[in-house]
Amino acid sequence: MKLVSAKEMLTKAKEGHYAVGHFNLNNMESIRAFLLAAQETRSPIILGVSGGTAKYMGGYRTIADTVQGFMDFLQITVPVALHVDHGTYEEALDAIENGFSSVMFDGSKYSISENIEKTKEVVSRAHAKGISVEAEVGAIGGEEDGVIAMGECADPAECERIASLGIDFLAAGIGNIHGKYPANWKGLNFDVLARIQEKTGALPLVLHGGSGIPADMVRKAITLGVSKVNVNTECQIAFTEATKQYFAEGKDQLSKGFTPRAMLAPGLEATKRVCIEKMELFGSLGKAD
Ligand code: 13P
Image 1: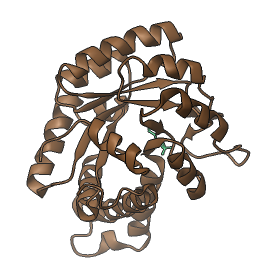
Image 2: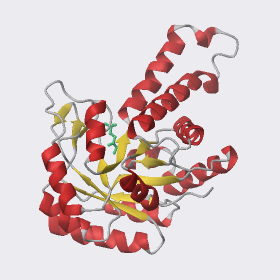
Image 3: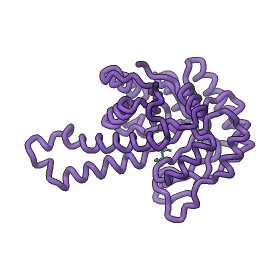
């Protein structure tokens, strides 16, 4: 199966009151882990690529060709979208020209008028090629240089303006942040989410910072219009913990235990396990059929 735009899978998710998981790629093991998790559970999936991952893994064209190559080799038959995560304007345009099937343009650092201008341009270039577009209003907080910024809440009126540009799905801050949530986190702001939902109608909404949000809050956000949930940190932690355990148990000292494929296998399995748990929570298992 070829990579697909995320529009159809998210429209179906919104109508069916579940969410599709977006999982960030970090290395080759993560490609294999997420594709196998989706295939085994018959779940649609979105693979996200940040600017950092794009640089690490050889650029958008290399990643698109690699993911498509894995899909062909593993005989993946569920819908998979390859998506730019928090792309700058330049990154979004680069990915559109280089094999991605979906892009996020994160214009939240700009004024709303500049965000609108740039989002419009990305929509027109992406849609000409059948590529779906995610826009963002209201910056999503998180840890930067050791300082954790609390998540902002998007202005529902600004969401309505961005939603009218023909985008396919919208990331709007509702107190969510990337990375680990601090002990004094106040939780998701469901009043703001309900107001955004009212202003944006059928448009699928995106919940970033999906790691560490209690399950009941995630379920409630889905009932209020969230159709895509982004997860990265929990998969990264699972990978690291499994790898640490491999060494702690001295498995690298066993015959051929030093080979990189052997030492990365537990991390791959742990990543796949977390991915399946999250997809179950989001309600997307079996939705590929
Ligand atoms: P977490 O790392 O908090 O799961 O957030 C991922 C994300 O939102 C990527 O855009």
